[in-house]
Length: 108
Image (cartoon, rainbow, N blue to C red; front, top):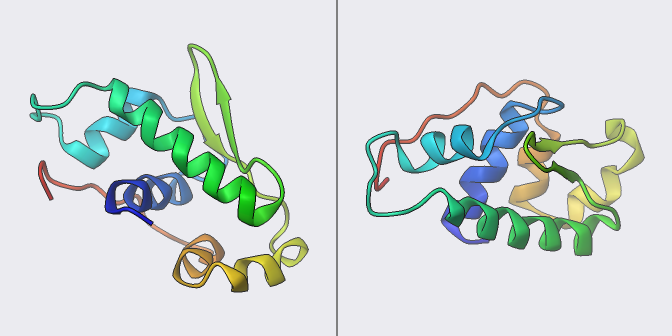
């Protein structure tokens, strides 16, 4: 999985169940002072991430709502344990019970 997608996933896991805006994701991943990229890159990254998770999990784990943002919505942990094991490192990330929100510096 590409670095940016993995960072977005990590940020979403840290905010599991909460609605987060494209701006919040952009600031966490690219940094608030990054002017090289536009926030619209987040839509592309999240779209690719949603497809990968949907293909592996069998359902859409990231809910998107226009003008609201994105929300990671996973069922009870025991319902998808086998699928998570198939995801390897990403599955371990999704299975973590307590992750603090990661904030990344620009260009990192």
